[in-house]
Image 1 (cartoon, rainbow, N blue to C red):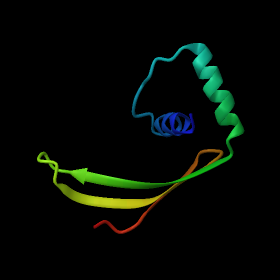
Image 2 (tube, helix red, strand yellow; image 1 turned 45 degrees about the horizontal axis):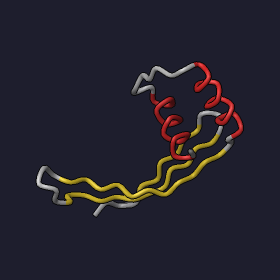
Image 3 (cartoon, rainbow, N blue to C red; image 1 turned 90 degrees about the horizontal axis):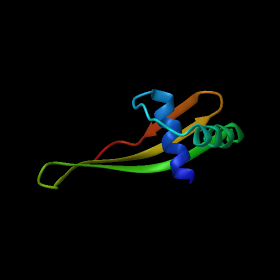
Length: 78
């Protein structure tokens, strides 16, 4: 559930994707997000070419803080 909340939060921050949701689902998500003041996660990102060969890998940390603050820290890619 935490991953779903994070994913929907990030999408809503950038407005990159429009999603049709049931009103009760929207209300439920808003209630959960209103309780969340901070969130942090470490991530690893891998980029592969068409043949499946890894061409880049990066890692870092994502920090979210209410209201509308976001920080993306990325370590040097290999």
